[in-house]
Amino acid sequence: MNKAFLLFEIKTYILTAIAIISFSQFVGQLFGVTIPNFIWTFFKSFGEVVILAAVFAFAFAWLLKARPHNKPKSYTVVIFDVYGKETQIDGIRKDFKTHDVAWSFMKDYKKSYPLHNFALVSDVKKSEKKTIFRYI
Image (tube, rainbow, N blue to C red; front, side, top):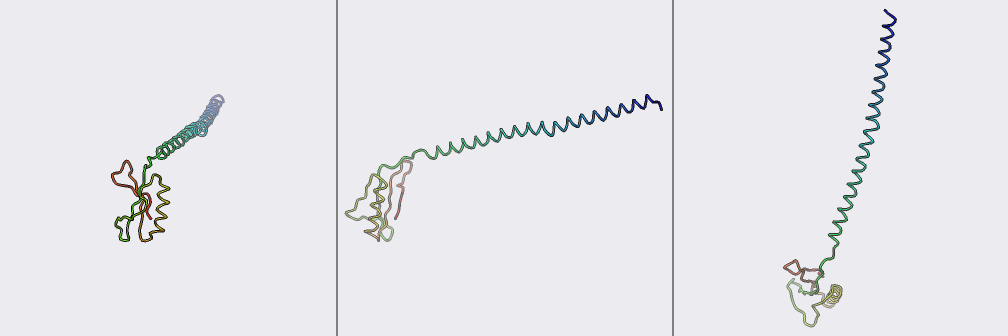
């Protein structure tokens, strides 16, 4: 064989090996560092956006739920006998303006009349029937 041809083949193999090593280095850098860093940055930012959206959704739902409710302007104490039928007891107060006062009177009535049950009711704007707030 010719020395020049042998040298040419060795150069070809060396250049091919260098090209393969360079390409594999490029592919390794691309798939090992560049693409994962880009994807990690994207999902990290996307995760922050999702968490921030969840916080705002929770805050919005909480604000809707925590808005002031329309409280009734008056409360009435309804009296039930032993058989569960509505009855009247003379001499007791039945109409109140605040919940706490009505509840306090109901507790006293229960002590004075243990064979009767008492319900604290009021008219709520969005309901056709009276709403029972407390029952003892």
